[in-house]
Length: 139
Image 1 (cartoon, one colour):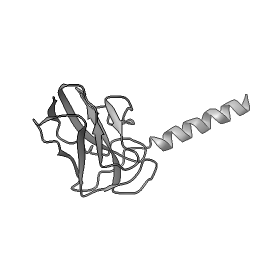
Image 2 (image 1 turned 60 degrees about the vertical axis):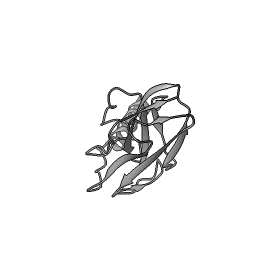
Image 3 (image 1 turned 180 degrees about the horizontal axis):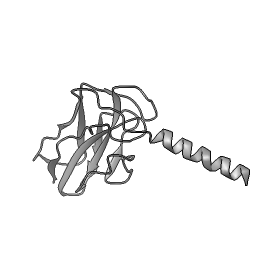
Image 4 (image 1 turned 180 degrees about the vertical axis):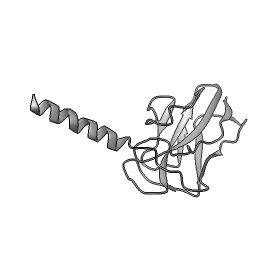
């Protein structure tokens, strides 16, 4: 019983350390989509280039002030919880290796794209660094 209580306490300490609070955004930082342009008509593969100003790119797991890594939201109606790690699924793509572009295969039709910069544990910065949402059409 004593061991179980110790383990429970360790789990709480670890969770509180990991989610101790959001990472501050570097002053003047912004994230944006370089290409494609809003309203563009494109074909597969779709090259999406990520822009970042006044901040650095660092891989997931590397805690370095003033840095983060990109997350691409595809066809997402609302932003994820800004106080929790960004989900990883078909609509929330993680670029934890520090990538600054991706080639996507998207179904024909209209799609929305948006970037969020996440910190070393995939949590948005405070205040969040979120790009404008763009809409593209894939032929």
